[in-house]
Image (cartoon, rainbow, N blue to C red; front, side, top):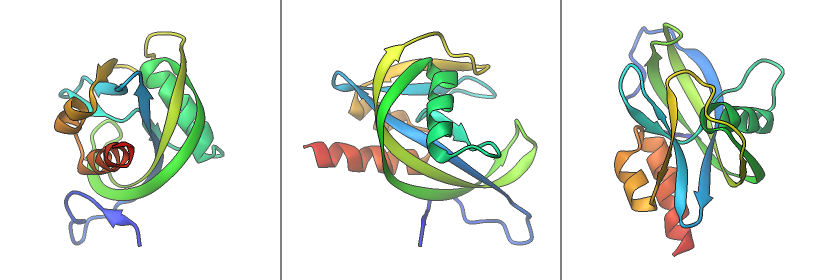
Length: 148
C-alpha cells in the first residue's frame, strides 16, 4: 500500500490521476530545490507530471531541467506517496502519485524555463523546514537520517 500524505480525498469529489517524478538532489552538503513562485511561494523537490508516452525517468530528467536547469545522473528510486490536491494551474482535483528519486546533479545548463520557478539551494535542515508538502519532507528526512 502506498503512503498517503495530506488531506484524505473529499467524498463525492472526482480526482484525476496525475503521476509524477521528483528528485532529491544533494550538492556539496546542500540540496537543490525549486521554488514555485505563484500563486504563492512553495518550496518543492524538483519534478512534475509524467506526460503521455513518457517514462518516470524521462520525466525526472525533463522536469529537473525545466524547473532548475540542471542535468542529473544515476537516479535511484526511493519510493512513492500519494496526495489529493486541487491543482489551480490545470483547474483539476488530482490524485498525485509522486515517485521520489535521489540523483546526482551533474551540470547547470540554463536558468529554469518553467514559468514562475526559481532554483533554491538549501541545507538539509532548511529544506525540511520549508518544503511545501509532507511527502517531500518525509522522503528528505528519511534520506538525511540514512546518511547520518
